[in-house]
Length: 244
Picture 1 (cartoon, rainbow, N blue to C red):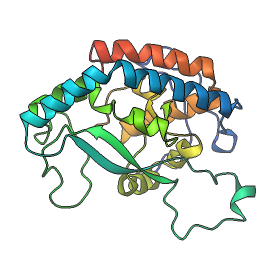
Picture 2 (picture 1 turned 30 degrees about the horizontal axis):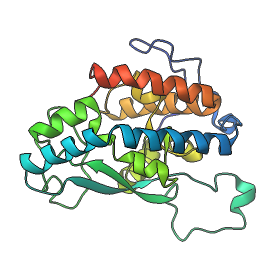
Picture 3 (picture 1 turned 45 degrees about the vertical axis):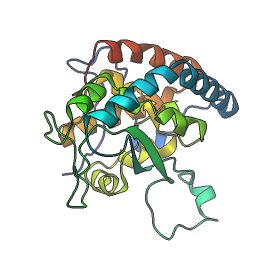
Picture 4 (picture 1 turned 90 degrees about the vertical axis):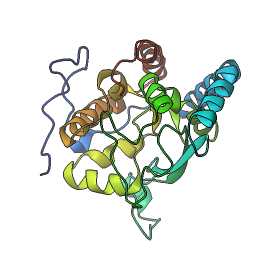
C-alpha cells in the first residue's frame, strides 16, 4: 500500500509537531549556510567526544564483558542524496540508485552477534529477544548512538537530521511510502524532530508518521532549529522517552 499525500503532522501524542507538510514538489530544504552548519556540528561533536570520553570507556567495557562479540557495531546506511536536484543529476549517472550516498555508521553493539544469522535485514521490535541485557539499557537511553559523533566529524551525518536506514530496508520503504526518498535531501542525523516526537518504529504507519515529521523539519531547517532539537533530545535520553 502506498501513501498519497500528507494530511498533516499533528495528532494525539505529538504536541507542537507543526503544520501539514506541503505536496512533494515543494518539499525542498530551507536555505541555510551549510558552512555555518558544518562548523557548528564539528564543534559540538568534538566537545561532546571529549566530555563523554569517560562514559565511552565505561560503556565499551560493559558491552565487552556482558556479551560475546565486538564492542562496536558497524552497518551500511543510506546518506545524503546530493543529486536530488534534477539539473545536477543530468551530468551524473548512478549504476545503481540506492537513494543516497552509502556510508558506514558506528554504534555500540546492543544485540547478540547472531542477530541476523540469516543474512537478511530484520526490523527491530519491542522486547526483541536479540537485544542483550546491557543493549536494552543502551537503546532505551540512546547511548548506543554515541559513536555516531564520529560520523558527524567525518561529514557523513549531522547531529540533527532524519535517521538513516539500511539500503535493503530503504528500498522496501520507498516502495510503500512515496515521499520516503525526500528525507535524503539533507544529511541524516543522530537525533531529529521525528525522534523526539515519536518512539521507535513498530509498523509502516509509524514510519509514515516519522516521514511527515522529517519533511516538516527539512522545510524549516536552520541552526536555531537544530539547537532547539538538540536541547529537546536531552530529556528524551534522561527520561528514556520513546526507546525500547
